[in-house]
Image (cartoon, rainbow, N blue to C red; front, side, top):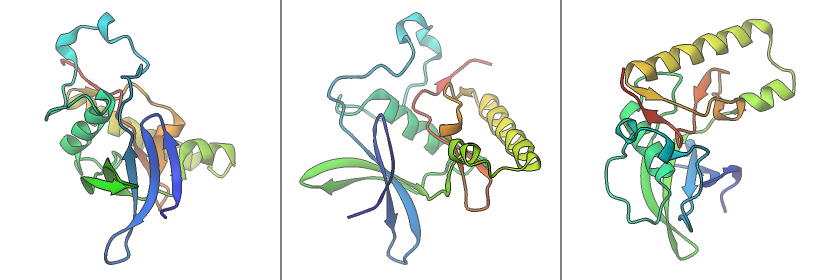
Length: 174
């Protein structure tokens, strides 16, 4: 059984390995029982600027899941401080098919680093600068994140910030 690294509103993140023994994190998405509120009133916004994920949705997955996968595939590898996707596939878990997004395994999130007081002032400034650069990059590609918080900033093995969780992201007109 894979070790659970974390969980969120759309499923669990587990530790996985490829055939060569390389370590990754896999986000296992839950099917949508009823479309949950993603924190924003979609009807109050102009529908013309909604980011529409590519591909169909048979209603089994929340729109936020499809949005996150689509945006991360679009941005994949284009910026060092935005989460990369290694693979998206379906797997059979306990007789149920589940969508799985495989990403590099991170050492933790910014929230934990803040809580344990391990960040020096120089590191804090570097993290802020790199996140601002990642956000500027996203904005230049017509995307806004809409859920920036320490829990959604992961730290890679070298302590570099990586922006994650794009389930609330939107396209905007520049």
